[in-house]
Image (cartoon, rainbow, N blue to C red):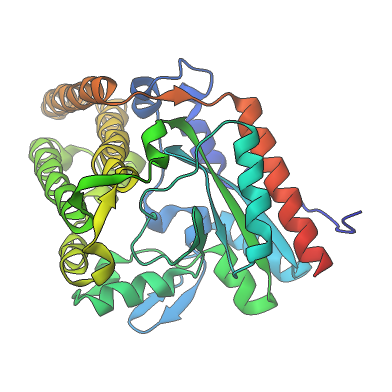
Length: 359
């Protein structure tokens, strides 16, 4: 008996759900997923626009959906929250807002029972502490800010453009324990391969950074001829701009060069994550680049604009197709059946809720 009163919010971001409808029923290929994918820019994400004042970061542009979430949290003062997240590609991993080692063996058992690998590559951000294999500590946007400050970034509010998140807000105000299970739709077994690679972890990170800078150059080149016709409120363009913000890459390079943790040989999982999983997520940005042009084309009747936007769309489509075809060759990926996704989410959530209730 959990003895909880559950408040279930089916969808925090209804607009985002609608903008992802194109891939929800398949076909489940990385091409179709990336071509129909949408994730808002950080400062327009419901779970990342909670208010914060931290050092030079001041964020109070709270979205209506975020305000509704904040009001609910303030009213119920939750002891435990569970956010159902997804990761597009990789393995299963978790976030916790405090270290609870007794929980982790049961989580791993839930994943092993479904035959899905753990995510043993890099954390989503080098600012995130790892508590155990595939278990990360959620600390809010302050940790990201401090990381960039540590490695000499200038004008950090240009890099960190969002507010903080619901789990940080809940913990700071009500002592809430928040738990997240990050589930991929696609996986390649290499994401769990802990054998040594032929390069250092530092070299793998630097290879990722150099590839990303070249990818950014190609995207910016396409936008030079068409962006003027898109409008500032184009949601896909806002998301693309977020992907192109590369002020944080040089601090990442410095981290890879200076941090002793990055001087050892990379594991196969870390190398795979840095090189190929990075390219998968960039494919999502290429898909949104196409959709930014389509969104603008549907809202203009100006001939010059139509010509420039159509040309930009065709260039973006070629860029997307080129990378999608390359990844189809390089990745040996499987699609996780939705029943397995649900089973893992549910079992992990119930185990975490029980442990927090009983302690």
